[in-house]
Image 1 (tube, helix red, strand yellow):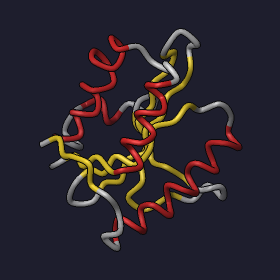
Image 2 (tube, rainbow, N blue to C red; image 1 turned 180 degrees about the vertical axis):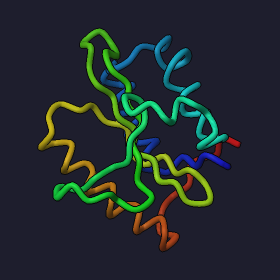
Image 3 (cartoon, rainbow, N blue to C red; image 1 turned 120 degrees about the horizontal axis):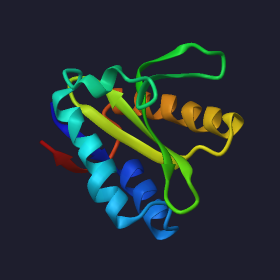
Image 4 (tube, helix red, strand yellow; image 1 turned 90 degrees about the horizontal axis):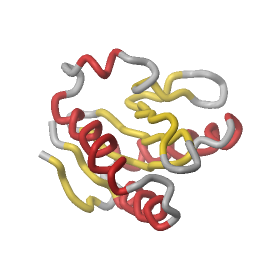
Length: 132
């Protein structure tokens, strides 16, 4: 499976990097290797760990079709919770990385994610690269 970097994912990554949310070492040693696991989704056992990978849900608690979240805890000097929304179709689409500050804010991010998944289905997204 190819891992597609959307414009939304690249923009959010650059914003988080600029704000120094995570270190260069955390990116190289933890985040990037975890994202590369998507090339073999769902065969890696890490995808069975609900502290790392879960189905995305909307504000009503309904599953978002094709929507998942990668999760990292205690990242950066501020010890934040980092999330990456991922759409799984025939390929994996990286949609947006964000800091989870509270449940209300995360629900807003996931509502935006749900709309972006529809745009991906329609072919209405910008591809900024592939990890194959």
